[in-house]
Image (cartoon, rainbow, N blue to C red; front, side, top):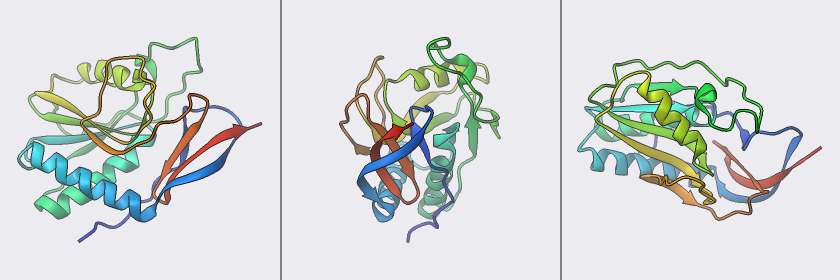
Length: 192
C-alpha cells in the first residue's frame, strides 16, 4: 500500500551557517509518508492520472521528495512519472543579499513543452525559490501547466505564490528554521 521510503537528505531552510538545533518535531516519519501518499493521490486526481505529468524536484530539498512522490504515484497509477531536478541558483532575484551556491545539476529527463510540470520542494517560505524555478523552467520549454507541491508551507510569502499540494501548513516565526527529512519535520534554529 505504501511506497518504500527513499533516502532523503536533511537540510535547513533557508540555508545558513552553523548547526541546526531542533526544538519541536511537527511530523514523524509516518506522518511524512501519509502526507506524501495523500499528495500523490491529489496529483493523480487533479491531472486525471500521470500520463502527461513530469515531477521536477528543486535542488536540493525537493529532489528526494519528488522521488518519493514518483514512487507513490507509481503505486497508485501503475506508472512512474518522469522525475527530474532543477537548480535555480542563478535565476534567483536575491543574489547579493545571500550567498548563491549551485546545489545540483539541472536534469530534465523528458521534454517539458505541453506537459504538466509539478515543481516539488520541501519548504515554501517567501516564494522566491519558486519564482526562480519558473524562470529556469522557461529556459527548457513551455509547459502546458505548472503546479507546485511542497511538504511544508510556512507562510511569510513575499510574492503571490500558492502551492497546489501541501503536506502541512506550518505557521512559523521568520527567524525559525524548518528541517524536512524522511524521518520527519522539525522546527528549530541555527547555533553558531
